[in-house]
Length: 163
Image (cartoon, rainbow, N blue to C red; front, side):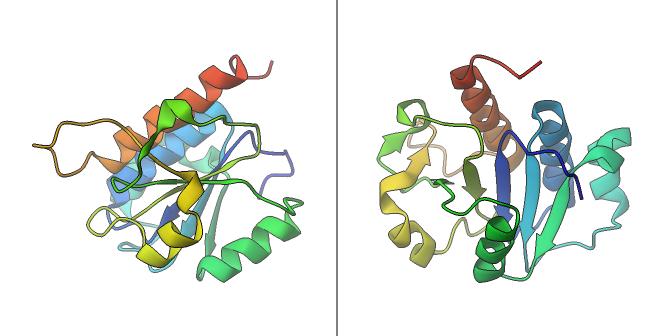
């Protein structure tokens, strides 16, 4: 685990596809974000698909796997994030990503590829649910593409990466 304060905290809630997680991990390295994985995972952490998608950057990913949502909250608190500000990505949101005011240290949460986020989390954080615009013919976007878009929108709002 890294001792550097992450620019962002990216949470994948019950991710299923190792290639998506690997790609998101690589993007986390690029922007200085910590990757949190909330069980259950649809793959094992030493999956060759995970490592291949993360390429030779996987060794640099600041990644922590937690058992459930309450464990995540506990670990965020232990990491010095006492009142985390959450942004949840869901197609059920009414607020667009560009309407959010991201700040360093924010926690950006993505659901599983097949089920999205649990309704209980969406209801608990209804004021901080965000979505990317898409035409009605599209049911969902790729998880890695969505995570990359949102991370870089946050970085854009910050004025770029710290030197």
